[in-house]
Length: 421
Image (cartoon, rainbow, N blue to C red; front, side, top):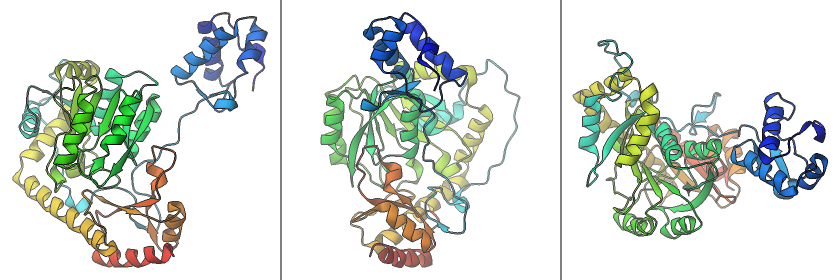
C-alpha cells in the first residue's frame, strides 16, 4: 500500500478525489485498507470529521467499503454467481437453461434499414404486450434489453447507491448481482411455497427499503408461486408504503402453469410488471416488455431512446409471437416443463409441485457438502449458498429439470439418498 502522504487534500472532496486518483492509477488496489480516520486527519492537518466525510463519499461512490473494525477498504468487482451451462462430463442439473428442443427456430426477416431517430419500439410488439398484460387502469409499455436490463434500469431510474431493496431470499442470481454491482443494499425477504412472506416484506419496508422486486410465479430458485390469498396479504403490506417502487418480474409468464396474480396495489405510485420473451423464444433474443406508470415510463425512455433495443430483434420477436407454430410449441413446452418438474417432485415426495425450470430440495444439513457428493456420483447441481441474500441460507439444492429424463430422475433420486446419508 502507498504511504499515507500520497493521499492529499484539505476538504472531504479533495481527499476523496485523491483516493480515487490513486485507485485509477493502480497505486491503491482492491482490498487495500485506507488509513484510520484519526491517523489520516493528523497527517493532513484536518479535522477527523473531514476525513470521515471523505470516506463516506468513497463508500457512496462504490470506490470503498466499510468493514467494521477492519476499517475502510478499496472495493473490487464482486465475484457473482451466474446461470449457464458448466463444462464437464457430469449430468448438468445446475444451469437453469431451457431445453433447446423446445425453442422456436429463429429466421431473420430483413426489412427497411433502421436509421437514427426511428421510433424506439415496434408497434406490433407493443400491441402484443398491451393485450397480454392483466393490469387494470392506465399504463404504458416500454421495451428493454431483457428482464435483467429492465430491472436494473427501473432501479437506477428511482434509487441512489446505498438504498435498500427488498429481495426474495433465496433469490434470483441476476437480481442479487444487479444489487451488488450497482451499490444497493439487499434487504432479504424470506420465501415459502407461496412466495414472499408478508411479515418479512413488512419488516424490510419498515426498515427503510425503497423498492421491492417480487416474482409472482415460477420463482427462481424455489419454483414458488403467489396465490390469490398471498397476493392480497402482500398488497396490504405494500399499500402502507406507496412511495416504494414495486417491480414484478414475471419472467416465466407464457410457460407458467399458474395464473398471474397481481401483487402491486393501486396505492403504489411507481410500479412495473416485467415480462421477457427469452425463456420461450430463446436466451439470445434479449427483449422484454414492461408495463409501468407514466413517470417511470418517461424515465426509462430517456435512458433507452438514444440507444434503443434493436428493432430487428423486436420485429423478430413480434413475428415469432404471431406465428401459430410458436404458439403450439410454447404450449408444448409449458406442458413438458411442468411434467419434468413433477417427475422429480414425485420421486422426492415434495408437498408442493414447483413451477418453472427448477426444483428446490430442502436438506437437513450442509448443501455444499451434498452438492459435492452428488458431483462424485455424476450430477451437477447448485447449493442454496449461491442464492443466499441473507447471511444464513437454509440448506437446500436447486436442480434444473428442463431436460430431465425419467431415467435421470430415478438415478438422481438414488444418488441424493446416498449423498445425504
